[in-house]
Length: 263
Image 1 (cartoon, rainbow, N blue to C red):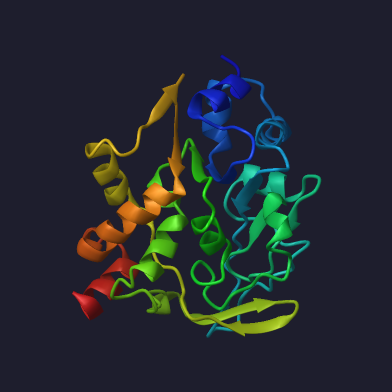
Image 2 (image 1 turned 180 degrees about the vertical axis):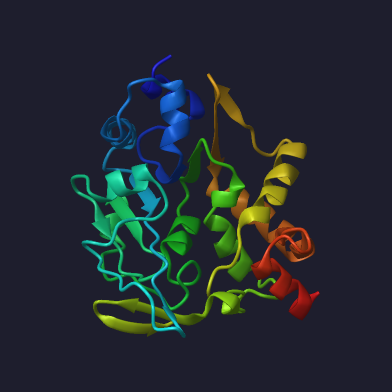
């Protein structure tokens, strides 16, 4: 099986709106000699411009009390969430949104609705690319070699379900302020996404209930999941079991700060 066949096996097709989370290291371990550009080309060819491809290109350019922080440049700042994310950002026809902390790279149909000026005060909530995906009928999350600890959509669910800490910053110990900083200036933020490691508990629930399926080939495990399913099931899980979205006690300073304040 080649990589294109693997994508078809997962369920990718034209006209879909897809956000991608990926580990190129895991992909190349299974599909030897494939290049990052070839991965991106295969994705574009299958989805076509009638569909949409979206990659997170987060940079986390928050203002800090210490005064030691990076300034986001939409055109120059490299993505901090993977090689394929950065490769996609630099590929033909892609635009990047302007959020100093949580920007996205967009290609295809989505660019008719969102442009480089998208930079909501709720970086992964209201007005964000994730909200746009939520309202599309044919939208999916593609995870290539990653688990739910990289599921950005989980942060959208935290806001939508209004978990107790949705607008609370757990990063005070890192001197982070709720302000994004870019070459355009400073932007006050309504929320700062917290730790995502325990989103794997949501993943375990969905697997246990046979609501999602893990696909494997030569050591590469992947998911291709309807955004509608994630939203519907996520709203129930995040509303009823929000305590499971925190890391084990005394293992994560960010989650411990949320636990002390809200549980």
